[in-house]
Length: 378
Image 1 (tube, rainbow, N blue to C red):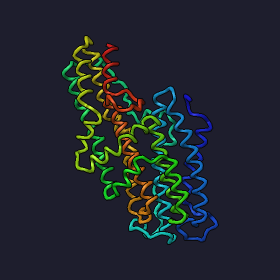
Image 2: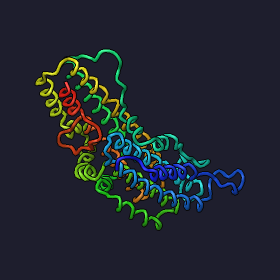
Image 3: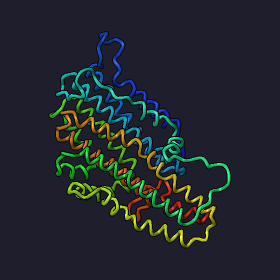
Image 4: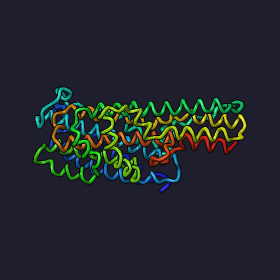
């Protein structure tokens, strides 16, 4: 698969329309009513869930596209779907509270709260290649003479770039840890090894513990989890499951997250490899300057690629404040989604720092590859 198809665009449009109209009252409803009838809402949610699952499968196929921009665009579409799906879950829980089906949290009291879907749907409705270009923050080449540099300046930019990417991952990871604070350690360990089918089975078993709208909400949390696993890909997901429980345990025991990342990424090895490349290169100042300019774009690229992660965290944070999410299966689905999001950010960061032993997503050239390519071209 190399480019979007009409079928894919149609599925995107169908999903976006379903999200936008999910909470809209029907024209025939009583004037002044602020929420759609719970039964009608549940039926709409069922229809949307089917479309969401189909869209996830179609989008994941583009991760194998020949064009890197399409690959990253597919990744961004999956993050956008995850964000919208969590917002749908939040809206369904708010609707359940408004209908008196569950205890209302402070955030859900009063008129039904419906999140704005504008940001994730805007990303989703952007063509894949364009979404990929925006996510990697590609900069147009500057006019004028080619930039020149030397080994010292290039290595300083490399160090600065590594520090910025590591800082970005650490900051996000700390926010995730704040989000899972208070969750049972055994539950987190169980969530770290969950697969989509197991979480999906939980939804089917919720009827005895939760209302219909709560069950629909959990189905969309699982959809978001599926989106994140699809964005990681099978190989990376497999490696994440091998390590993430240990990473969480280490952090919960008080290890600083930047220390853990230093161990996971083996940053000194990347620095040493770059040093060897630069010191052993006969490349002229123009080639060093071009490599330095390319390296300098990587922090912006990382920030753009992970931007939707903040909205995902916000969505998970809202869910945590609703009493219904304290039902064990709901809590488990939410914890698994937190963990998948943490894994995504760590593995994206691993690509940028060219972590030697971490499984690669491989959708962008990391810092070592950028240096290798830049110096070889000189």
